[in-house]
Length: 370
Ligand SMILES: *[C@@H]1O[C@H](CO)[C@@H](O)[C@H](O)[C@H]1NC(C)=O
Ligand SMILES: *[C@@H]1O[C@H](CO)[C@@H](O)[C@H](O)[C@H]1NC(C)=O
Image 1 (cartoon, rainbow, N blue to C red):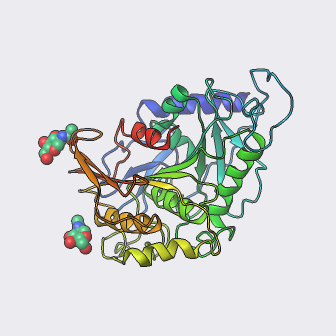
Image 2 (tube, rainbow, N blue to C red; image 1 turned 180 degrees about the horizontal axis):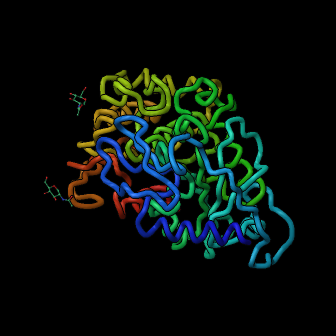
């Protein structure tokens, strides 16, 4: 009780002004707040990232305090957990309306923190969104710093927020384990959480989606490519194609060639990289929505085209858009639809790295049909 109260107060405080613990507070191209929560100072890690750390200098990954899963506030109308896909009380063990840490959800080889949000309006057989922060972020930071939670409140789906625990809280998008189906690493941990949700909360297996920003956007492509059996769609906010980054998961200097826009491959090569992750898989692949700003100073805009090549190849589409509309979903953005619509690309003229821009989250949720 006390710890959830403390967590609530901290989250309330975050949404007002300062950067939360381990959040980004500076770096090239960064335009947000440079002021950390009390007890934290802004520490420069490299030219691209400064991070709020306790008192001084030791980079400690995810906060170690855990919020115990408390008993539900609403009494379920029927008993016990429900098997995959059947109707029933959604996640009776998860309290509604608060971010709750989930422990013992299965194989977690890289110590990923898993936090779940069940809105008070949760539907029976709810959809599930996996939401992934950028480098230096946490589940708590992405919970309070993006608009997905409000959409869950409006539409009744559940959200799992992950917290990466290694590489300056960047997701593992380069390791062979993480890039292989059930091979281990961060992707395995996130897959465990999704499988747990499917087995125990009555989540609709046809409505499991993933989204994320920056490193979380790269991880969105990874989850879609490595676990196409679990993930039905992805929304990638300022990422790179799966298998593009090569010099580790955290920002480096000089910039990774992929981040700098120097990696170009054929659609066939990008598609093969995805297919190699899960040899023998013959089922469908997720629908994908890809967002990038033309003035992104961290991950060069050319990466959008590489992602389009990757996913149009997977869906056997032409790389030429079937329709393009400008001013969608807002001024300075344009939307391109590929093939029969399972791939969408969004270009933000003059937009930087700070995606999703306010209000654009709804376009992802609409695309998913959540
Ligand atoms: C982005 O990449 C393209 C293609 O490699 C290059 O021409 C351009 O200069 C890069 N932009 C920046 C800001 O580095
Ligand atoms: C759109 O871009 C123009 C210049 O290209 C800029 O003046 C304007 O502020 C931008 N609008 C938005 C909503 O970002």
